[in-house]
Length: 110
Length: 116
Image (tube, rainbow over all chains, first blue to last red; front, side):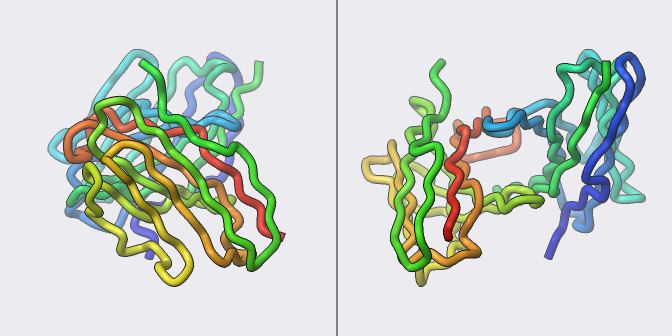
């Protein structure tokens, strides 16, 4: 029962352009949504979050958008940098539990 | 601040053998989690501890997996006997508070287990 889905396993973007990573969920009761970034041989690290009562949260080059009616969220990275190349996991939270998507591998080409 | 420490980094065992993983959370973090991440999938929660008590172990295959957190600090996860499908990265994470979404959730680097 996969409640959080990331349908794009990989994404390739040119340096300086926008990267858009997408995530869909099925449970309308989720309280928070988070994005994690993972480099090879390291654990995931927290990147940005958004409460279910908001539709946008911005932190520097990273912006997360939440569309509750569509049960969809996206992470925008502008401008993309080669150091952003990593696997990005979407996660949803409710009742003291996190549910993770399968990840999208972002490659930012110099 | 030191991160979440896990060992070993890699482990290769034959099926039906046993294996144990160790996790040392960030000092002061009350909540500790073990996740299983199979290749191509997101992390899946196996067990959550609050101090040394189990909060959620609903997805832990209890016939072969066991975990403990003695004294509410370090934790070990054991698999006995291992199956081929247990090949995965085992991630430990810890957080402050009761594990809310903004409670300083931090992952370790994981242990990559290969069962042959």
